[in-house]
Image (tube, helix red, strand yellow):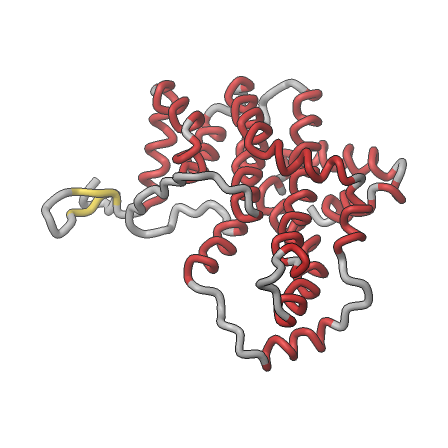
Length: 274
């Protein structure tokens, strides 16, 4: 395995996996037999988000493990309950979206203003959070990467998307579970949660929610982001669940929502481009 490049020798004469993705594969494979380890990851909020690739891989190994899927689903519901309940109380999705989107925004003018401004670019951690929310699983990342420990789970849009992403990836891989009711329920939950994710993203950048630190520049950014938030949600949804395994569920959901299309415009927008 050394000659084949699976592992490599470090400067301190210790050995490690050459590719982080290969290391994650073996961790996921170990979860098949090591139930205690798997359960400890699911139950530990400080580590859970850092094992998203391993949980996705494990779901691919055990495609009919209904109990595992339900555990991931129930954990996601528990963590995201405050944010989902908050927006559910505000009303239907189309109303929530229209109340937050800027009307008649001239995006060309806004972009030009941003280019002329002296605002600082995103720092490296902010770039990582943005890329992490849309980056697909890859086994080509070189070098074993130390897992991030989340000392506190703060439900901002980046963290919300991470939790939905894990559920979506696990859900799409478990295509041998014969429980149509559960499938429809989880799919609907993921769809609703991505809608709520977009509202959270807009609310975080809304200058009215950041008084007195807001500025004219913040208003420009909010106007720009509010116009693109539905597209961001759609891209994240594609990244999480777009797969031929779910084609039937997606088409069935579209048919169902089209029965009352005027009241389901946002959801239909997200589904049409899957």
